[in-house]
Image 1 (cartoon, rainbow, N blue to C red):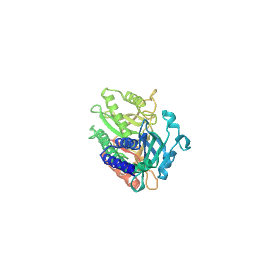
Image 2 (cartoon, rainbow, N blue to C red):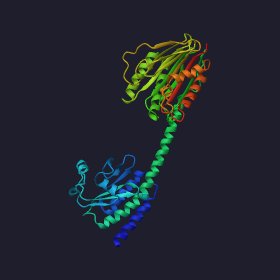
Image 3 (spheres, helix red, strand yellow):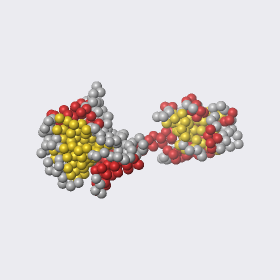
Image 4 (cartoon, rainbow, N blue to C red):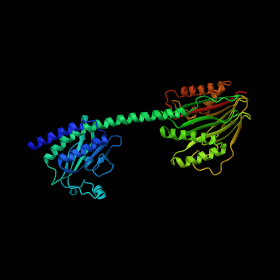
Length: 414
């Protein structure tokens, strides 16, 4: 009892030490070092329980890297499942022992104590494993000490783990906020001014950030470059891809690249930069108000809507080539050209509008867009964009937005 009382005093001293505001990795190192010292052992490992993957994860271990194991496998898994201490006096005589790690590291495990780390309301925080007692095997007194130590360690590790999660969540929120501010900051602050034309744009991401983009880049008083695109996926990654496309386009135009050259070079650069499963659909168009024409390449972006005011009819142009970043361009076809008569509308509308579903799964579709324009035959570009956004929300009802939404309209007024 005297030895046990002495050990408990040491554990209480350790508890006061562990009460300091350490980060999780530092705390894990402290728990391992303390366990080895108190139990006079050679090596220690803490497995943290990952509830989401149902795995036990080693973040800190003596001479071991990070490893993951299923929470129901091996001696560690058995201790986690049963919530009981397991004392193995001879590792190589126990069929549950996995020799693979010893073989990989060259270490020889002789004996081990495996103790579950239980937090509030018997929740599993992890498992503590102590290897190779110096001068013998672990006895009942070691089991008593290890159980008391594990109880204290579980509490402080649980606290550190929760604190880390809160800090990580706050950090991620800050990063997302910055990414959103950057992305929103790249959108046009005001619509361009070209005599005889009106322009409007709208962007509504699914998440805090999105993969859609649009831009107006004036070339001179009569010419305007129109950009609209959609990077695969949602969130920060696609938002960065979208911002990259806009930045590269503006650099290309500043260097007086032609429509064809801008499309080819940006496509080829994205092929080099993006992962194989990522690409960007993109509309690159040049409006010439002196000729009332728009020449464009549409890489995977479609349909491109052309409303003919005189007849009330619509053209829905498909994509002219494959998406940007999909494969290098070796034989780009000539750009498609459309002529805008008085009242005509060129509409660059993302599939977030066309594919927006109502509560019965019916999509807004081409018909929904056409309905809005038919009801506003003399509406400005701003009025038409606002009404499309209102109508698609009304169409969706309680159905949440499933994809990023972007609309760019150019309307010839006379």
